[in-house]
Picture 1 (tube, rainbow, N blue to C red):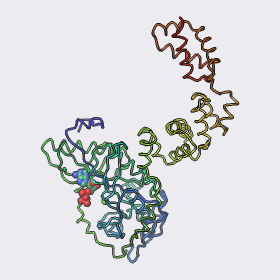
Picture 2: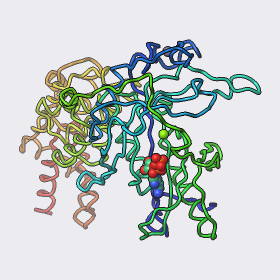
Picture 3: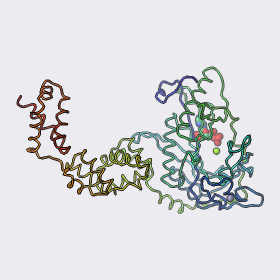
Picture 4: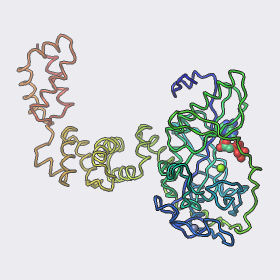
Length: 490
Ligand code: ADP
Ligand code: MG
Ligand code: ZN
């Protein structure tokens, strides 16, 4: 366990990691799943509760239609099949954050099942199967740092609609788990069903981890690490837990199926309890909630209303537009930024140039301002025009960056800035040749160096010409002209 494990060593490991993830996301409904209490995050503790979500005797739950619709929406976006009815069951257990003594969930008929999500290189993706997507209610939240020597509970969260998304054990590394979560999170954002903020607990992850000797096709004993709340913790916890399991097995020990806790500070997993089995919960249909039919035409309406999903968008960016996987991921990961990029394309910009501008200049400005794309002052059509000026050779890239700065600062049109500042690129051979000759005459040493075989000297001479023209010379042309001159007479 003392050996640090990094992602890069995966190939040399004698064991294979097997992971299945159970992800909970809070839906973005205005009110709770079975009552009309608001779901706002960060409210005064226990200010958003009522007899229904506190489970007082004699109250009756009423299903929030929006929650059901969002669940179907997410399940469809995860390529699931949809159950013809939504049925609710009681999962019975006792815990301070669950006053009712049971949680309303879905047991044998999850709203969505048999879905999948693609991860990895879009040219050669891996499909992680999704076993089920079901709807349930959230519990209250135990707080251990509010009162000295005591734990208190905030019930604002109880009854917030939750979607639980359970993968098959198809994930084969900590990195792949992170990749899966990233894509899953994007699906939640694109479909608008959750804000999926791990730091606010609206996306929570339980990791099931096992290991087996490389080449084996038999699954090992699983441990479940509960409630991880950042991508980083997920990666570290899986790495740690797999290594721990392998060391136990290698020393001739046996593992038990158990639930473990990730100790954020010490970066270790700690045994909590034996893993529960389904029969421990005594699931039974909730007698207060009748099954709700999910008519096929309603489901199809929801399917038709889905936007382009992140997976499809990512594939299109990489395979059709020839962007790098990294650039595609950055764009897709920020729907606002991707929207701006799409607008640039619609305004006629070339894809790779557009992506490069968005991910360098535009993003740098946004980061410096701490602002989102909505606050970016240059409309896409205007930036597309600037890109065209570069593409046509009217201005150099260097000049374009200056123009961009002025456009952001003053809201000016690119053509106006180019004219006002005399930035038109010099592509006139005769004019440039004059300057080239002047530079060559003034720099005998670099000229001699170049002729003696030192290629770097050319860069210096190009730089001098660019300086003379205040960056306006067409760099390719300058290069050609210099080479011509230097290779002819001596
Ligand atoms: P249940 O808890 O209903 O008995 P499982 O234990 O099979 O179901 O599955 C719970 C989660 O554990 C799922 O996300 C599944 O992918 C994952 N899982 C199942 N088997 C393994 C395994 N051998 N290694 C890692 N994860 C597993
Ligand atoms: Mg569960
Ligand atoms: Zn309530």
